[in-house]
Amino acid sequence: MIRLLLTVFLATGVVTECNRTQQDEPQAAPRQEWVAGQAVTAEAIAGWGGEESCFAVLPIDSAMAACMVEGGSYPAEGALISLDELCCLRVLHVNADRDTMCGEMICNKAIAADLLDIFRELYHQSYPIERMVPIDEYGADDEQSMRANNSSSFCYRVIAGSTRLSKHASGMAVDLNPLYNPYVKTSNGKTVIQPSTAGPYVNRKADFPYKIDVNDEAYKQFVAHGFTWGGAWTSLKDYQHFEK
Ligand SMILES: [Zn+2]
Image 1 (cartoon, helix red, strand yellow):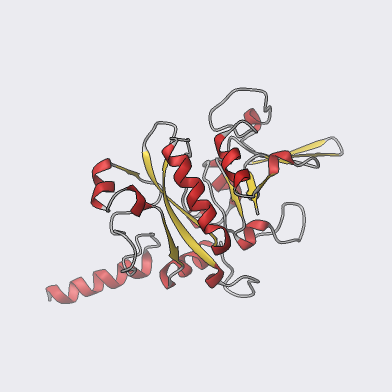
Image 2 (cartoon, rainbow, N blue to C red):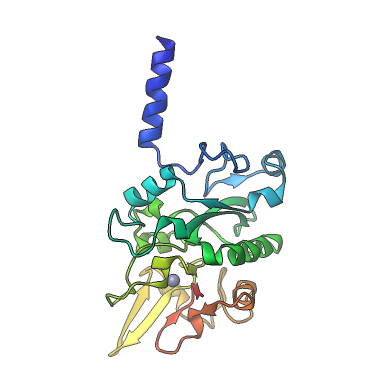
């Protein structure tokens, strides 16, 4: 009887939980307590084999793929990019309170090594990144993810105001600390700000945390790895955005 109950519980847990612990990934470093968006202690990191083992590139396994479809970042059919071309980065990052956080980011395999280098360096510099969880935790709603200041890469979507696929649809772009580094476009006297709650951060001469500019360390890291910055564009500004 006990065994039967346990089986039911496990089956239910597998079906209903879209967590990212990847317990079925034996090649990964200790996943059982790794939850993106949660703070970790130095003891936990040591228990996982040290900091370096917390920077890894994981394949998109079947459980993660199911969560991406359920969450909405990956369409159930018709996608022009296969899941084999994507991967899940696992990194440590430091938030503005100097907590060490577990981060996860789905991106294209082609930029995974670059991003590991960049996020490892930013971690060692205690560069503040508030949150890095799969956008599926916001139902793949970029506005909600940006309002939560969640840094992300892959999401199958079109460029705002067009029908063209975004660089995010191939996982070749990263949005970093997006609440404080909004997308700003002015045309015909009308200004669009995304997320819509980012009004206080449109004035880039003001001083506030998480601000990306050409003196910013994240800017320097991304550019050194061959990315272009949306804050340098002239037709619009996308201060959170780096793409390759
Ligand atoms: Zn972007």
